[in-house]
Length: 190
Image 1 (cartoon, rainbow, N blue to C red):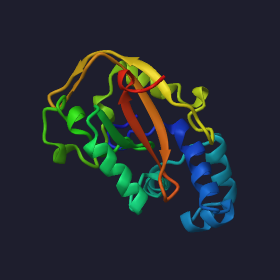
Image 2: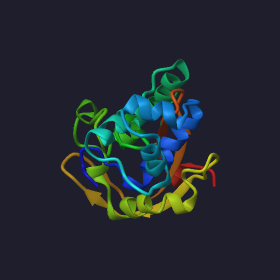
Image 3: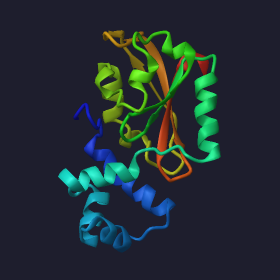
Image 4: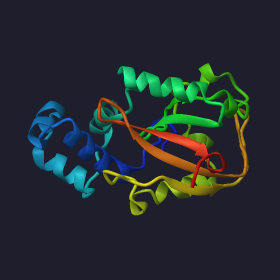
């Protein structure tokens, strides 16, 4: 997984299919817009093949979280003003969208330097392992569950990840993309 786009290839197909269904776009229309065949869209969505190069760049641009509506901005505000240690990232690209002051205390660099950049390079082994298992745990289902996992302490010049239990929730945004709310499980109701 590249640190620049931080996308697991296995997540692209389900994310593309979900975006297309939510936005009521047929495979033929999407294929036309992307300059590929309908069968290629079908193969990407089913996981038989993976988009690469310019195709991947166009799909990532389409699928990455664009929180622009009033409800999306309200979500960003709620996360940014929370007293709990939480942050919100693009579900597909791991780009930072919002962070609470309590979470930012563990980060050693100005938030402006991290905002809208992928956080994947700071992932601990526990986070990386959880990411690999998202699909088998129902993450991409229409009403997918929260996922809880353990992460070990990891220190980077830009941030520290404390040893903790993490809970992630997949939240739909108004444009059909998804954001991921990342919370310490100790602060959530089980």
